[in-house]
Image 1 (cartoon, helix red, strand yellow):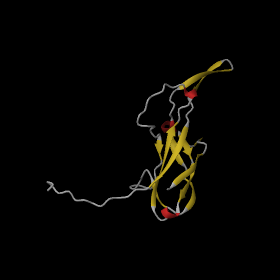
Image 2: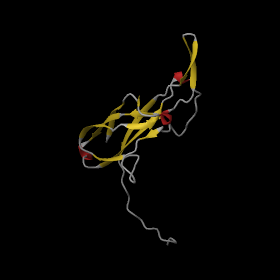
Image 3: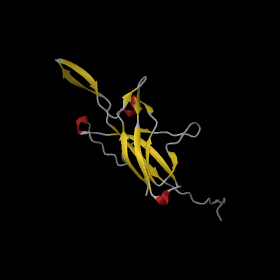
Image 4: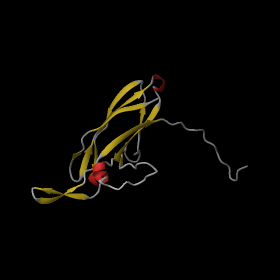
Length: 151
């Protein structure tokens, strides 16, 4: 079974304008029986809520929602995944950098006031993000023609 491991989100750094540079690397491992098969690789960024955030807990029964999903390809064929052909063994991947609007990764909106040298200073809440890399395969059924009205 295909495996993703050693996912690393490099330190996120500011770039031109109000953008942040995001770099992700990971390893894919395929068995000899998977060699030559096509797999989809998708990458999402999520926000992490930590105790220091002092935010109310909100029940989310649908699971976390991605803040950002990597896109692959060029217009008009942009996809939220990339197709790869498996080779037996381990493959190290470093994705090309993405520049993401800072507002998109703002998972802790607002600010807090702190006292610095007798002065009250307002700072933005820190944002904590993490990356999830997934690999999957799929198979297509035959095409069935539906007659109208069905017989």
